[in-house]
Amino acid sequence: MTISIVRVEDPSSLQDAFEVRRQVFIEEQNVPEAMELDEYDHAPQTIHVLARDENGSPVGTARFRPYHDGGVAKVERVAVVGRHRGTGLGRSLMKFVEAEANREGFREIRLNAQTHAKGFYERLGYKAAGNVFFEAGIEHIAMWKPLSTHQRFSN
Ligand code: COA
Image 1 (cartoon, helix red, strand yellow):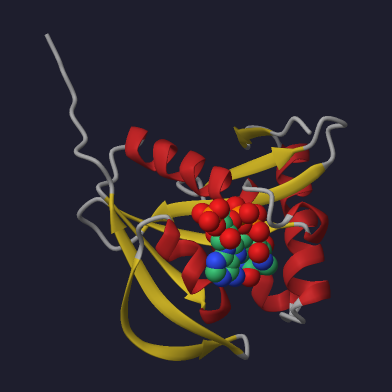
Image 2 (image 1 turned 180 degrees about the vertical axis):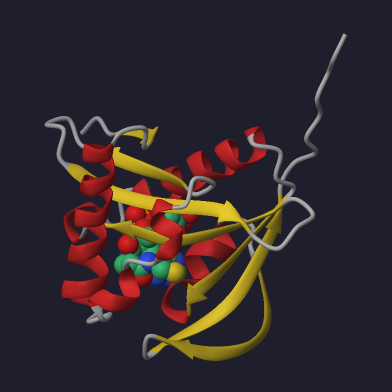
């Protein structure tokens, strides 16, 4: 199956990303709707990415945004719909996010992984830091990964 992954550039694609998140986080994981959508979703600096299948149906999403300062991007809301899990889509989404974050000039990615997904991020080179904590009633652990050196050339 051919999957395309793009940056969200229009309101209807953003709604499609929210629909994936609704299925995965609200319906499947019982995250309260009031917590799932937050103030960062419509912030101008937040970049959403969306995966569609060959029929154009939304099947995966993630977002990233500047975090503190010093070139750190925080990745959040990484989600693949159930029927597409285990096919490499989650990895492709994260690789796309990393490439886009690198292109934006970020040097490091941080995220709070649900502990069941720690191995998924470890396979992508992320390292855990600190203790397990609860967010929306779900166990999480902070993880981070440096991005490759970002170089800008000017003449
Ligand atoms: N634990 C350990 N390893 C995992 C894993 C898990 N939960 N999920 C996937 N992997 C491994 C795969 O076996 C694969 O290994 P490989 O390198 O040997 O091939 C690799 O990670 C990539 O897997 P992939 O098929 O790309 O993962 P996916 O498409 O199933 O997506 C999630 C992974 C976590 C994004 C997906 O399961 C999901 O959306 N879950 C529900 C929402 C969620 O919990 N999101 C995370 C919030 S922090």
